[in-house]
Length: 353
Length: 190
Image 1 (cartoon, each protein chain N blue to C red):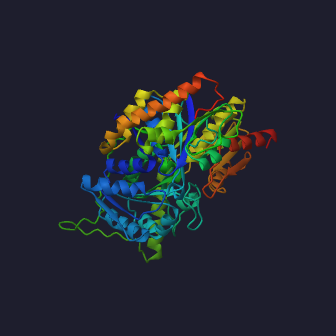
Image 2 (cartoon, rainbow over the protein chains, first blue to last red):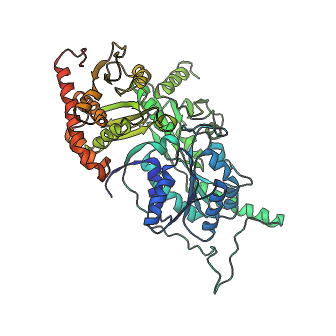
C-alpha cells in the first residue's frame, strides 16, 4: 500500500490510467475535466506514452478507435457536449467490440449548458447515446479514491469483455480533492488480443469493422453481443449500501448525490427517522435484483439525482410497482443540499406516501 | 472532531491555497478530509471560494452548505456566505477590505486587518496566511506545525523560500486572534 496523497478527482483518473498501463490518450479540452488532458500531457511523455490533443472530439474518439484496433490500452475524456460529439465513434467501437475507456465528467445541459456538475447524462450513458443495440459498461464513482480504483477496473473490464467502458463522473467529483492511496493493477489473467490488427505477417489477417451488410449475419452479431451483455449483467453488478438494513425510507443515489444523500441520512437518523442508502456503482448493468432485495422491507423509495429524473426509471423497473418510488432532483448545475433532501424525506414520511 | 469551513475572497488572494493547506494538514493529522473549489468564470478575476471538510468520521458530503466557519477576505464573499454560517459558528473577515462587520448576532465574529498586517510584513500576498492563522488560533482544527509541514507539500519547490514569511504571517494572525480570545468575544480587533 502506497502513501496517501491529496489529489483532484480529475488527476486521480489520469494517474489511474497510467497505472493501468494506458499509453495512448486522445482528447480535446473542455471544462470541467481539463486537469485530465493537462496531467496526461505532462505524464505521458514521462512513461513513453502518447498524448495527442485532437482537432475535435469527433477526431479524438476516432483516434481511440484506431488505437483500440491495434490492441492498445487507450482512453479519451471529455464532458457532456464533447461526449455527444463522440457518439458515432462509441457506437462503432461497441459494434466492433473494441476495448477502451471513456470518461464523462458531466456538466449541466442540454446543449452547451453550463460548467457546474450534473447527472443529466445518465440516459445517454446507459441507454445508448449512439445508434444501434449496444451497451456500455458504466461505472459511477463517488469519491476520489473510487475514481482511481474504478478507472483501473475500467481498463480490465474493457479488455475482458472487449467493450467500451465509461466512467460517469461529474464536475464536483472531478474538481474536488480527497486523500488517495494510489491504486494497484491486479494481475488478472486477461485474454490475449489475438483479434487486434497488429500486422498479419505469419498469420491470417484480422479485420475489425462494424459494417455487416447481410442482415442475417448482422442479426447474429447482435445476438452474440446480447449474450455478452447478459454475461456482464450476471457477473459485474456493483453497488454499496449505507444503513439500509432497517430503513423505512430507502434513498437510491449514485456519485456525488450519494455523498450528499449520506449527509441527509445522518441528519434524518439523528431525528429518529429510519433512512438508508442504496448506491449503484455500475449504472449499466444496473443492480435491479440487489435493489429489489434491499428495498424489500422498506415502505418507500426516494431517488435523488442531479437531473430531472433519469435513473429513477431504472429504480421503478427494479421496484416493479411494489411500493412508491419518489423522486427529488436539482438540475442545470445546481446541487441538492443535505437539508433539502432531509425536507423531502420528512415530507414523504409525514404524508405516509 | 468535525469541521466544515468555507474560505472565500477575490481570485488571486490565495483562497484555494488556504483551503488546501488546511486540508493537507488535516490529512497529515489522520483526519478524513475533502476540498472542493469553485471554478470557472468566477475564478478568473471574480470571487473564488473553496469548501473544506475535516472530520474524525468519514466525510459524507464534500459540499459545505451550512459551514461551521467562514473566512471571508472581501466584501462580496462575506455578503454571499455570511447567511450560510451555522448558528454559533465562526466568521473571520478581512477588516482591511470590509468596513462593516457582518450583521449576525448568533455567530462569533472576528475582524482581522489582514492586508495591513501583511503589508507590515512586507508582502501583501501573505494576507491569506494572516487570516488562516487567526482561524487556526480559534478553531484549533490542526496544529501550526502541521500547517507548516503541509506548506512543504502544497507549495512547489521553487516557492519554498516563501515559507519563513508565510510562517510569520500565520503567527501574526494567531497572535491577533488569541488577543481577541482573551477579551470579550463579541469585540472586534482592528
